[in-house]
Image (cartoon, rainbow, N blue to C red; front, side, top):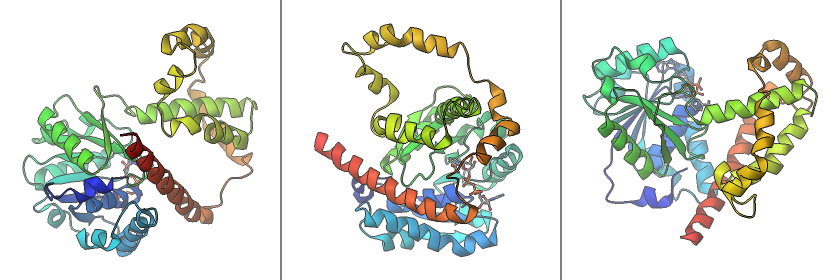
Length: 325
Ligand SMILES: NC(=O)c1ccc[n+]([C@@H]2O[C@H](COP(=O)([O-])OP(=O)(O)OC[C@H]3O[C@@H](n4cnc5c(N)ncnc54)[C@H](O)[C@@H]3O)[C@@H](O)[C@H]2O)c1
């Protein structure tokens, strides 16, 4: 979620941002960039998606408005153009954010087209969750300008973006992207080496693997596992990282913490969950025993509920951060 300061910065250069693929992530990026004052072109190949795009983007802008995070939702609408045509979306673009499906062959063909059609030397970011850029940019003549800018769903309410280049990505392009994201109120982090899943999804995967193991071994129910996170670990993790957290969990700080607890964690690490916890035989049983699981029709309602709470949390964090400056 971008700050009002970023959105109100009059000296900032207005750019044309091309959003390629306008599903869940693309349309949320549109709110980020339009809120920051940039012109945004949303492109997609699906007519049904294009038809409702303006309304869905505006629903998200309205959430920001309700929580005091956006002064004028109409200003977002005025910045949007919607098209099914790739080359017109790219004409005059200053920055591209690709959000097509998470499939390597689609990323390869999309990046080939983007590199051919986009103005030369502009940054081209992929929102990919886990695929490293060298796997889909290797043979492109403009591969120096391609990289990963991986957000968290939904980027207009969760500010982190992971920046990860390939060995041939120009450091200048990565620096430009860092500045652009930061000026839009995002919180960019630099991933220093290509690693499948980058950092966020490796952490998410580690938590999920252990949770699946504990459910599979019938140590806890799904509902109590979720409480352990939202009413336990997650309470601190909404505003502190795991290292900031452990520093306060022993009277003399991090060294003291590791001395007290490393042997415990070493013992647990000796029995990792293993990849079989992701087998369908395990996940299907867990889903069957998940009493509070949502029906398909409830997903949209629950997503709106989540976004209201995320906006509320963002407003609270913004206020507390300002008070602490
Ligand atoms: N959903 C998440 O939690 C999440 C979080 C971070 C990153 N991502 C990544 O963002 C990307 C998009 O994910 P999503 O969740 O928005 O998926 P989605 O299915 O909601 O959206 C993908 C969109 O791409 C469109 N599309 C398909 N082929 C296209 C093409 N050739 N050109 C243009 N558009 C095309 C589809 O019509 C669809 O609207 C993926 O790489 C995903 O891994 C997803």
